[in-house]
Every structure is written in structure tokens, then in C-alpha cells.
Image 1 (cartoon, rainbow, N blue to C red):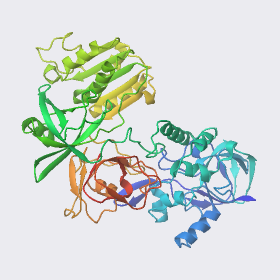
Image 2 (image 1 turned 120 degrees about the vertical axis):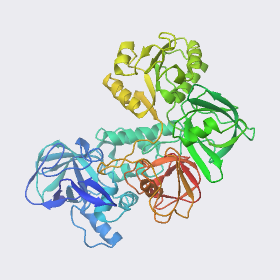
Image 3 (image 1 turned 180 degrees about the horizontal axis):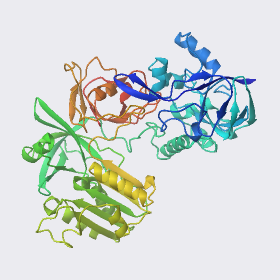
Image 4 (image 1 turned 30 degrees about the horizontal axis):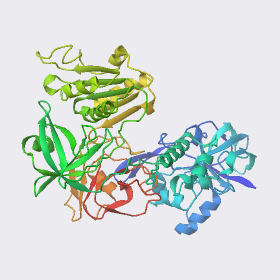
Length: 585
């Protein structure tokens, strides 16, 4: 007979961890007497990070007394108390191998339904004083599970747990958990899981992504957890390319036509992808930067276009010192900001040098003779800074159904309204409404951070679904550090203390080259020491939130990831450089 052994609740608190403040509800304490179970929570309980925990499908977390006994033996710990795994219900019975998604149980006067396994993050490691705990739970098949509340009611320690209904497909918590996190991911089981109505939305989306990955014959990486290289980079590391031509596109943008030094064809890039280049003005100075490809598919060369920044060492070197005939190192095209092969209207929105990836998309649309409506919406300061104006007009003229609108925020007196530009001002939601841009199209946005934020919010307010808004942000991507208290974000910098003796670690988007040192447990810790924006959750190679592009070099893992990253990617939370590496951060 299954029984409720303990009810555990706790409100979020701030705890100190590695020099930071973590807001977390992982600390739970046993309570006596009846407690009301409500749709989103148990009375007296709360979650510190509602993006990752809590909500209707994660209202009550359940863990088994038998798993406590297992961990006591495995970890050599005799001091574990109910609630230590952050669970609301400690139960006797209801093993992860027996309980199925969709099962319904009566406890006291509450009716509850199993929705998903627990997704474990780093905070359990803090609570348990076992940093690898998130990986251990998955590796040992003991995650625990969540209930959603079908009927609110009162529960009390000692209540009998009675099964009321059996979930369809009879897929256990153990099986569902392994299906997402551990290879292989059999198609038949994924399809079975997607037929379970009770499965939470997040897990449903993950299994759909894994199915789509198999349909596209992309076998490397785990699309249910992180980005899958599409396609995998055509080569590892860098190839030598020669500067065939330098072109002044405007007063502040220079294009480089790059041809492979070995004379072999280049790999076809998808429209919207970027490359990482390494510039070496001197033996003592190397600069690694990422730039979008700005032209259409070409078997002989690539084009990148670089804006001159007043304090940008790489852009100044390209504009003033790099010469035709010089050789630079170039990584293979990569990135998921690419043109979708659909018949829907295409809306290309850009500002400033953000024009480059969407210009490559316009090249592709013109080359294929696209028949759908194509909208070209671009903003810049004035005619002196309006790069690719004639090129864009020529490409649009080759399309059967095209629309164009150019905004100058600070037009020069010589700039001609109606000829050089259409509107004085900025691209914004109001202008999109006036132009009657179709809401059912695919929108591709690239430009400065404020432009991206404003236009993304504006499109959402106009009713454009989130999956139709595709964005590319130059520079570092937004960080994801769940539960960490907000603090000012300084620019990326060299770490404090003496330079390490190890391999060179280059953060391409941040423009930082740092020697690896023995004081860091992972590439993630080195990035954090440099205030390079990073994304993570488990810190043990489980969740893939930290998955980043590995442009060059090789790494070792400790612990080994449960499922390897995609080809050309790295899980920085558990990786250490074996030699010089370049990372897309």
C-alpha cells in the first residue's frame, strides 16, 4: 500500500553560493497536521524560480522513501531527512519505475495526476552539498515526479494513496525521463509519449523536437534539450582564406571577399549563417570575431561585411590595415538564424549592420525566384551609412511580389525622400501597422539590442506568434542564470589574478582571449570569472542549456554528459580544454 510519509513545505530564501546570491525554494521542512493542496501549490510552500519550477503541471513534487535509502547507501550519508530533495510529498511506494505519466491518485480529499519527471537543476546540488547531484538523479534513474491538482483538497501525513486511474500508454516516470535525457531516443517511444494528454507542455515540446530531429536525419546532439547544428559545421577548426577583394560598401562598412587559400570549393552556407574569423596583426596579438555572411551561396568565396567601430580593434584593423592578398583563418559557417523553406510571406527587418544576414536571405529568395510576398524593411542613420542600397533594390526587382521601406533616423540634407529613403525616423510597431505588414508571415530580425527588443515586443503585440519571429543578435547572447540575484553586468574582461599556464580559450563574441588555469573546474567557471554572458541550469552536463558552438579545439568532460552535444558544439558546464579552443560566446 502506498502512503504519504511526510508533507514538506518552504518559502523561497536567499542563500550565498560561490560569491553570488541564489533565490531558491529548495529548502523544505516537514509540517504536522492537514495541509490544503491547491491548483498551483500547497499552503505554505513556494518556488524561487517559477520559470523552472512550479506552475499548474508542477504543483506538487513527489519523492520516494526507497530512493532516500538508496542515496544514503550510495553517497555514504546517514543524515538525509525528508524534504531534503526539495519534495513536497515524501511517499512510501510510487516508485519511478512503476508510476506512469497520466496516473491519477487520491490522497486525502485531493485528486492528483502525474505530469512529468522532475527536471533537476544546480540548486539541489547546493542543498545536498553534492555538486553532481543533478546528473546523479538522471544517471541512476531516480528523478521523482510532479503532480498537477485535478481537485483541490486536504492531505495529512499518514494518508493512504489510492490509484484512481491508469495513464494511457503506460509509460513510467523512469522511462519518460530516460527517453529525453539518455540516448537512444526511439521513434516509437517518442510517438507513444506524445499520445499522453497529461504530459506537460515543456516535455511535449522536447519530444516533438526529438522527432523532428529524426525526420531531418540529424542524429548528433539532443534537439529536445539544446541547439542542434543544422547542418553540422563543414569542417572543424579553421581554414586559411585569402582576401580576394576589399569593398567600401558605405562610409563605415567594409566587405571582404574571401577565397580558400587551398583552392578547394567552400561549403555552401545557409542564408543567415555566420562565420568566425581569426585575425593576427602580429605574433603577439590574435583577435577572434564572428560575422554574418552577407551574400548568397557561392562555391568559390564568402563575403563578410564589417562595420568600423571607433574602439573596435578588429574592425579598425580590417578597415585600415588588412590588405588584398592577406590570409586569415576562417571557421565553417554555422548558426540557426536561417531562412525557413515555407510559402508564407517573408518579412526581413534590419537596422544598421544587422542588414548582413537578412541580405543573404534576400539573395537566396531572389535566386530561387520566390513567389510569396517579400518585405524589405531597413533602418539606418543616413545615406552615407546606407550599405547595400543598390544591391538590395536590384534583388527586390527580381522578385514577383516585393515591398520595401527604408527609414533614415538622421537624414543628411542631400538625402532624397522617396528616392534614397521612405521615412525619417525609426522602424517601430506603429510603422509596421501603417504599412499593413502581414501578420501571418515569417519575420527575420537583426540589429542593435534596443531595435531587437522593441521590434520583438511590437510584433508580439500585433499578434505574431513567437515561433514566427526569428532573431539574430550581434555580440553576446542573453545570459541564463536561474535563481541568481540580479546584479550589474560589466563588460567581458580578463579574470582577476595571474594568467593561467594552460591552453588559450577564445570567447569569439566577447572578443576575449584567456589562458586556462587549474583554478577553474570548467569552461563555464572561466567564462563566469570573465563576466562573459553564459547560459546554464544543471552545471553537470544534463540540461544542455550551456551548449555553445565549439569553433576550434578539443575538450575533455568531467563528468561525461548523459547525451553528447551536437556536432561542433560543447557543453561548457562540464568541459575543460585539451588544447587551444575557440567558443561562440
